[in-house]
Length: 139
Image 1 (tube, rainbow, N blue to C red):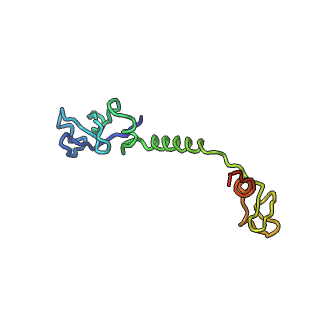
Image 2: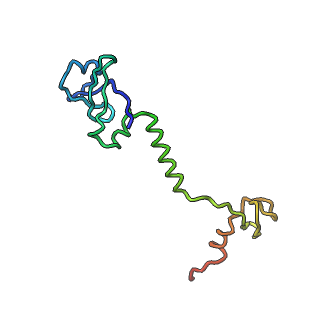
Image 3: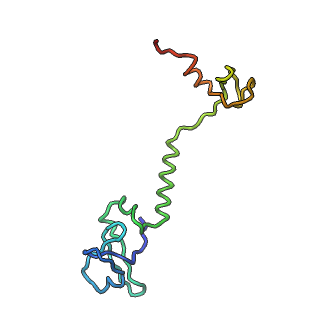
């Protein structure tokens, strides 16, 4: 998982420290200010010191909620979740058979009753059959 470099961490007592300050405190355990994960200090010679998440000791869901997660990774996760939601939806079926409850007209095609010239009182033919026509309940 791609994590961004951290330049601010918490020490054991919960105090903030920059990566530069951390180089003068060897042996200290550092944690991420966002997710609380353990951090490893990198004090390179050719670049400024920085912290890296120890990804081997923490669950993926914790890292996914961290502010230092690469935004592209978050975007990919959101796209995957959205695709799974969309793929789970039923496909809509366009109705072409209608019943106007105002004037009692059954008609086909566009939702506009030929008798009253409006579609505001029209319901799908299938709904009419379930609710008005073929009531098989005892009573």
